[in-house]
Length: 216
Image 1: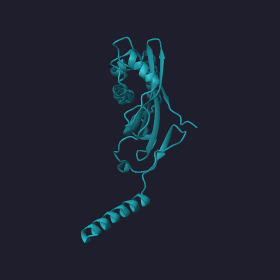
Image 2 (image 1 turned 90 degrees about the horizontal axis):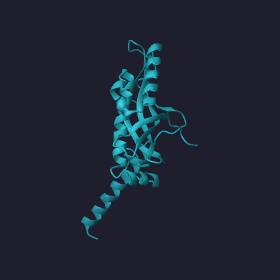
Image 3 (image 1 turned 60 degrees about the vertical axis):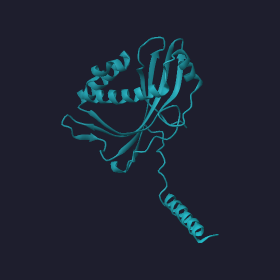
Image 4 (image 1 turned 30 degrees about the horizontal axis):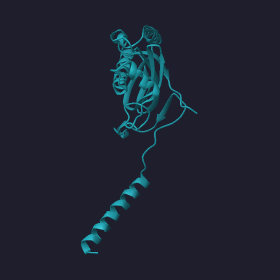
């Protein structure tokens, strides 16, 4: 073995050893878990890395698979693409949340069913009457995925899970925080249902909302 080859191998081994030590001393932080609606993550906002969502069910995640029900939707609607739906759902999620907080739900009425629109308007009016105003800042979307698809005749419902890290506060009419902590990041799982008549030219609209629970 030549001296050059020996030193090259020695350098390579040192690099591997250094990488192993770094991983051992500072391993990747696992995704928060728990059955609670919101789980606090006590760390400064600056420590949130802008990394990509982890692989998971059909979604904006890499390596996703297509379920049999989703294939049936694609057969009924040749223009349907799961990725496109998820991008639209993410946009709707952001717009509806902002409209709710600002009391401008009329501006996004076309994004939801009449029942959901009426429910959100009533909820916002109740919050205003109580002097408790929600204020949310989404730090990042950890994962957006289709968790379940239901078909009945020509109508389709798709449950989409939004896993986000966010700062959620309740403020009074003067903007003073009365609940929550602006330095505390919450891990939140929301399950929204989007529906559509597959034989129509209409868009997918929000038809159901709930906070997702961690499965046992």
